[in-house]
Length: 262
Image: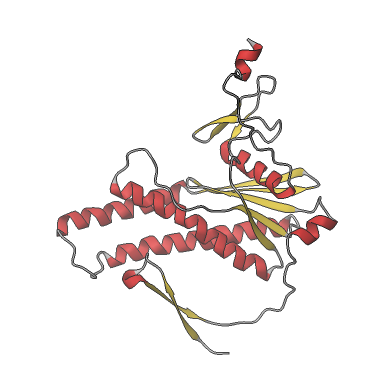
């Protein structure tokens, strides 16, 4: 084995290319089996589900025998603030320098700082997720399947919108690093459809209302309030074991639950 230069197309880097020097090493281990095989023989196996977000980088939950054993929150407010300051400085310098020349990178040092803090955060969060899985004996880590980026509807500054986009890209970096680190530990990484995970009550399977980070169940006979990211993590486990209930379509003449009890 010898050193190798790795080149990958990446629009986040100058010239659209990302270079990395690879130092190979060997570690022998058994490849994790497919997800269906261990689940079929042991439905109550230890599993870790992870809900990734923007302001909260990750909300983790460890399950065994359909019971929640532990949770862990990884906050990202400080990272978002630091990235936003760097992006503000970049756009301020762009405004002072005037029109940019084609194919000439601008503010190279500042952009490198932005990329480096994102890459460092992705590696650290991935390491924490894998450690959490190892500590609780989990052999499967479940993530949401990441869809394409959709810009926010509210008005933002250029640096704010760029910060929001890079925070979303960071989620993909975290999943990539977890998949790599977990594989070395014999842990399988899977993804599940994220539809309705933060909109359905994980206990009574009724739709709820999400306001920011807060979730409120709309079932009149079941008062449940919780963190929306925590609810998403709980419902990811139901997506894993097949017990998640999707909302049914409401008829036009059907009253709301609150009107029924009034």
